[in-house]
Image 1 (cartoon, rainbow, N blue to C red):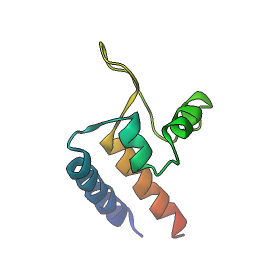
Image 2: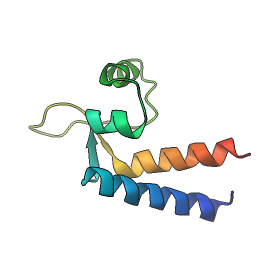
Image 3: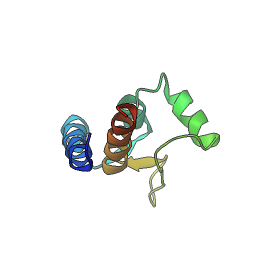
Length: 85
């Protein structure tokens, strides 16, 4: 898979996630679904252990952690790209 194909896959994944969740920002529940974690507790444990492959952040005056759809789609495309080699 070439870099152009990887970028195209990332863009398609981003569009799919945007359509599915309706926002460029994912909360923990949505992140759990997008990355196929078994439970929200598993996502929180990965965050605590710093093994979550996506950068999460806080928003002012909002509870919880959030991630960008772009980061999730780039990660998934990179994983698909790396596995084909």
